[in-house]
Amino acid sequence: MYARKKRNKWLIMVTLLVVLSIASVVIVYAVFSAPFPVKPGVKVGDTFTYSIVGRADLSENATLKPDFLDYNKTQSYDVTVTGVNGTRVSLFVSWNFNNGTNRESNQTIDLATGARTDGNGFWFIFSSGLSVGDSLRPLASGYENTVNMTETWNYTSSSRPTDFFQMGGEQSDSSTNTTWNDYILAFFDKQTGMITTLNHFEVYFYPNSEYPQATLVTTYRLTQTNVWPI
Image 1 (cartoon, rainbow, N blue to C red):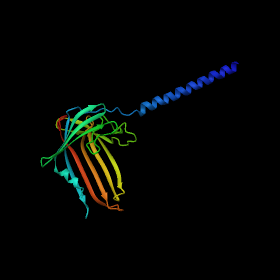
Image 2: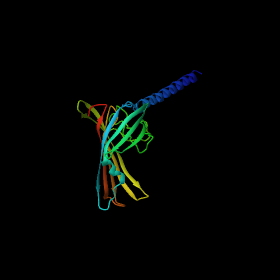
Image 3: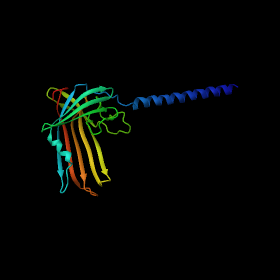
Image 4: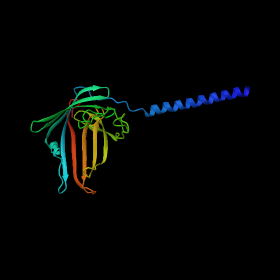
């Protein structure tokens, strides 16, 4: 009887140790795998004005996308924050052209997941306070793009920490037998999460060839904001 009680106590102790060990692992995992707390760094009324320039290097017989020419007709590209709700930021965008016309659009983007209401609209805004190695979209499943580097940019009367990232890869369209490389290299202000400079590279190749048919580069550059003097 005594041996049985002793064995039962031993089993209870082992079971408790196992349970406590599992609980500790779960707690440690939860702490170290918890996503970065997403914090919008902008507020309603913040404005950001960009210049846009497009550059094209075309080989013989290459054609240029019709809308690409619009980039070099840009007078200004204005982004205004119209709403902040949790991790969601709403924007009003006015793309203004040299001939006096403009294109207006609204965008709402979740900084945590990247989900947005306008798939073709402005999306270059991220959480405030990201550091090297942090995901650009902390709650997006399978999202692998992170902050690659942080440096300090000097402005008229201030210095501001600025993050850098690069993303992209090879794309293809089987219907047109077209392949191209699509890359984005961008800097964004650490506090507001808004881009300061962005270069979008598109390199198109001849069918079944490794030689480029066309190289397109689109550059966004912040020229004015009411958040800090440029």
